[in-house]
Amino acid sequence: MNLDLVREDIAKYLNKKVKIKIYGMRNKNYEYEGILSAVYPYVFTVFIDGSEKSFNYADVIIGDVVIKPI
Image 1 (cartoon, one colour):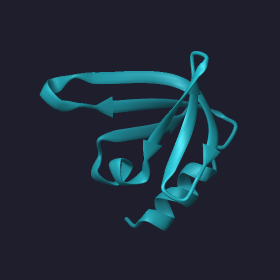
Image 2: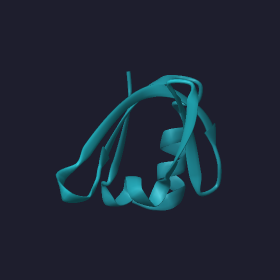
Image 3: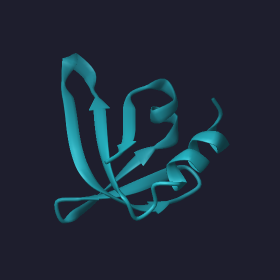
């Protein structure tokens, strides 16, 4: 997988509802549902519960962040 393919794949979900799973350190995992609000060259943003959170494409590539459409 390369960065361009991941960016194109995530851009398909723009303005749609997505589920984000974050695998953190020390077995702390988080799960959010929101709307993919923007796609930038190195990050994408998701509008979650009234705030916007940004995520890195590199984290998607290594598996720390998983994004799926709802």
